[in-house]
Amino acid sequence: MRKLRIVVVNPTIPADAEDDESLRAQTERARILRIGLLEAGFDIVASLPSDMYLPERIAQLQPDMIIVDAESDARDVLEHIVIATRDERRPIVMFTESDDTESMEAAVAAGVSAYIVAGLKSERIKPVLNVALARFRREQKLLDELSDTKSKLAERKVIERAKGLLMQRQGVSEEQAFQKLRGMAMSKNLKLSEVAQRILDVEDLLG
Image: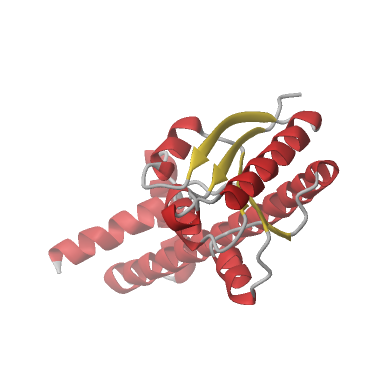
């Protein structure tokens, strides 16, 4: 079974916060996270800073999951990740020390699958990531089903409009109009909705 490919994102510590305590805390968090990921059998493909190049690097690496290790507020990180996952969604897990409600809501709105407060312990990482992955896949399935339903509804509307146009122009019944559409679709090896759209396009062109 292929290992899950993971990119870890570490927010950059502001210049005025680069004291020994902050550096020690971040180093320790990074160590715990790395140990937990390796012990769980995951593949860490990169550890990236949160900067303007993050979306490009994620697009190049194509990870299966993104983990954000943020000791405090990580809005800048989330903005970069939203851009990086806009066209291709991925599960995102955030480990943070911040229990601020506003930060949590912003993270969820950005697409974070799991928001874990004060829970960066190596033995917890595998179950947390498994739950996040399962939740993401379920959400993705629901989104795909919703998109498919919307697409079918739009196609049905196009077909109904084309049928109405044929009935009006050629003085045929609804069933006859449908059979004409179906016959054209079969002869041209196209979907019914594609033929219907072509008929409507021609009508718009000719006025």
